[in-house]
Length: 410
Image (tube, rainbow, N blue to C red; front, side, top):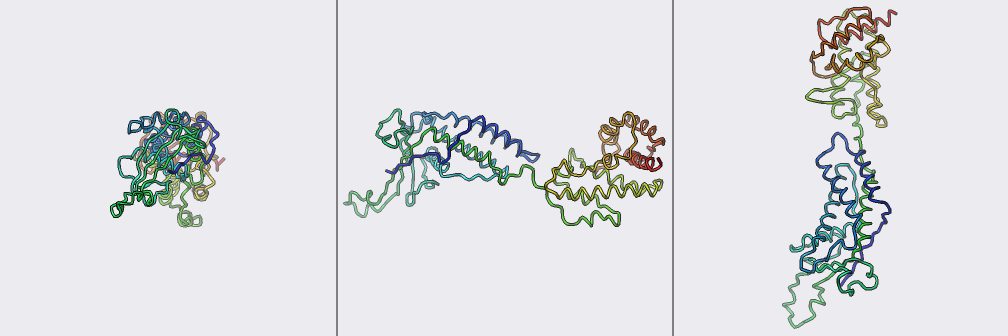
């Protein structure tokens, strides 16, 4: 008979509330727009429930053992809760890119779970027990210190709550070659019984420490995925000497994540770079724009796109700190002041007046009431008429071009 006294290798000194708070913080840091919401909700629920279950583990956590041949319902509940929790941590760790190793205490508890749940079938693989040569392991009796013969809880085991027997068998067939040797199986060690002693407080420590280790671990976590480096082609897509920008190539490169401000919704691609592209091309195509205004537009947009490219590559900058490609930001020092500017230009311009200006898709949708109000206020501020003969997007470009011209003249 071999005896194992399961004691926690690490002390857990926290509380279940602290673990729940850490779990909440972990969710905030690790969940993002690529989260598998239904999967992760289930896994988090298992961890929450397990924290409470193991924190409140008492000295009767296995009930009355298995006096009647099959385990008490509490035994199965305990075993399955261990399995669910360890699996949930491991699976969630894969989703959140956190790899947590199982220590020897956890592996022994998982072996106990396997023995409890799978006895009745041939068991040959237990991770923590050295059972080389044995062809099967089965659950023996589960003794509880409160109800059974104290013989099982003597000396160093006197303060343990339960004793679980694991019965191992080599399936030896050589006995038939020497039937007269009555102690053949003893010499051959054909049978091996292992007793594992458990105590509720020690099991609690083992499990909650494993949960805490998972929640504290950040070594390989990727809360927000590191920005994917753009290829070394900046001089090709943003040629300052030639005064050219390949907006389409840049948008293609940044379109895979939200980091660069690129978003897809309802089949529409949104990116402020598309608005700059419209204005850039408008300035090149319209002959009524002066060379000085055209040069300012080109210089401003190339400089902003160049800084945007460099910032995108800087992993120390968050998405919020990247260069703003909104045309209103790039040319903010040129547009005139008027009474409802904050409302019409700042709030409604790309919501209601020209909602497709910063999109890849061409569409002339507009809210006529807001459009008329904007034209009226902008014309008064500029002292010039705005032409709506082409499109709403063209009108927006015209407004910014006229604003630059007015600034130069004044």
